[in-house]
Image (cartoon, rainbow, N blue to C red):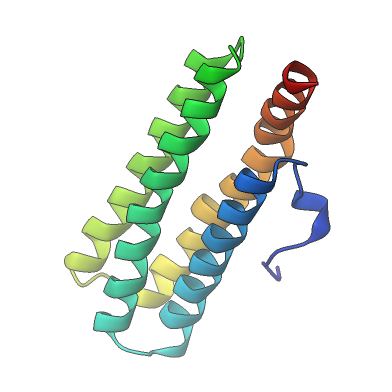
Length: 135
């Protein structure tokens, strides 16, 4: 499955969309580094960036939800926390020198697919709520 940014992922909130683009690029970079044998250091650097930026994005997105009294904020926070754990597990596996090809397959399934589904199912609802409240 090809993975990357498409306009289908637009939520309508410019801050969320711009951060999602950065996260999608980080996931693509991680997939490419894992598959192409760019070396363990490159993979580690990419997954570290993904982990750091994911945390930044989730904090800022949750702050928006708080500001606009998003009714499902607690569930959304739980979904974010679960994703952070998935990324942390991948970091652990890379640090344990697990096969990068195996990790790449799991990144595609566990990270890329989760993130796209999260945007399509959850983040679009958040952006719509913010848009409605801000109007």
